[in-house]
Image (tube, rainbow over all chains, first blue to last red; front, top):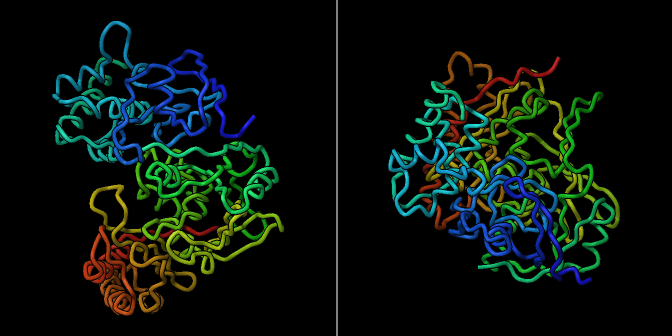
Length: 164
Length: 294
């Protein structure tokens, strides 16, 4: 088989085992959107600077536009779809809505994934920690303040009401 | 844009990886973290005929403390993020741990590798300057076998290193830190995580000082007058840190006046000439003792 030819890639996405054929040059971002129909992961710059394509790879936030789908063989990927409950919004998503932390919404999936990873690792971050953790995500609409507030509010609420 | 068509090899051993590279003459590239390479492919700045994915090669991401020499040996495929978490790095090479949070962003650090950053040799990158500041030794594997190159002889210029086509950087050896060493890294960038416009990695005390500028020219550059100032005043660091920082800044200003500073989209040469002494002073002020090893 030609080394450039399409081959089958099998991985776990949002808890489900998925398989599809793809060329090696297909990025994970495109694979999720095109081959798997998971269009929640957005492609903003496609060269690793905007963070709109952020997904979790084996638990860690990564840029889906800088990974080839073939590299995710056997891995566990979580996208924004995997962080959204079937019957509504997560606490983090609700906090974004309440704080007006999204306007056009294009950057939002990347921010939610990055913030989710941050809060799992650091349940009680201070503002500087939140800003550093989200420094790789660009938003053109909100000016970032409401995003930071939404993440801090989620952390506060989880501490008082218990994690969901 | 999308990366162009390429052949994809996924070797499981170093020998296989070297053989794959050899098949394509000079037109194959190793793929490490991909955080610099893949953007260049997406922008069609490079179009290798083949990518040899190192992520599946066994044994390239090890961390080992040499019991005899006290040197820390890090595999080239170690993720940059690991530098922030590794107990061995924290204890034995804290300048690496101090540098990591300055490197790009969380998501980049989760995939980017130390070997990839060193091999890519971006003039604004932190790790090349840190490697020079720590007198690291690079171990390079190729068809002719294994060889070692000191960091001082590894960086040739913009995106150019001692790693020849067909070779792979496999391991970086960081010699044991002397007792009483202080280290720091400081840089100025537009926003946290952006490319450094001017940066300094330094180490002093317990041995000859190293003050290594990055983001200034096409490679990490030792600021020798700043080093002399640190050597002269290291003993005063605790009691007269501000004066030491000021004398280092003055010396750094002399150093950069002799350099052909970068003039680019990030910053002008004049800005870099003014910023370098400030960065050097702030690095001195931020220096932390390393505790050494018993």
